[in-house]
Amino acid sequence: MSKSAAGFFILALLSGILHLSLVQDAVVTLPLIACGVFGALFVLALIAGRKIKFDPVLR
Image (cartoon, rainbow, N blue to C red):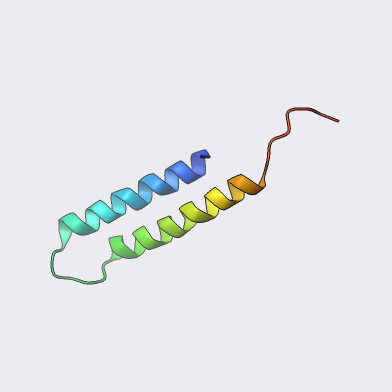
């Protein structure tokens, strides 16, 4: 996992926890939207990390 993917994962996790701890009645809040955005960026960072392979042998 790349550093950016780990960062997006932590941000998604923290914003999800913030949503659950702040509001019990509201359906959609700003931390929940941020959690979705960071989750999507996490998945994209994982996909980008899989496609870019590091080749240590210089040819």
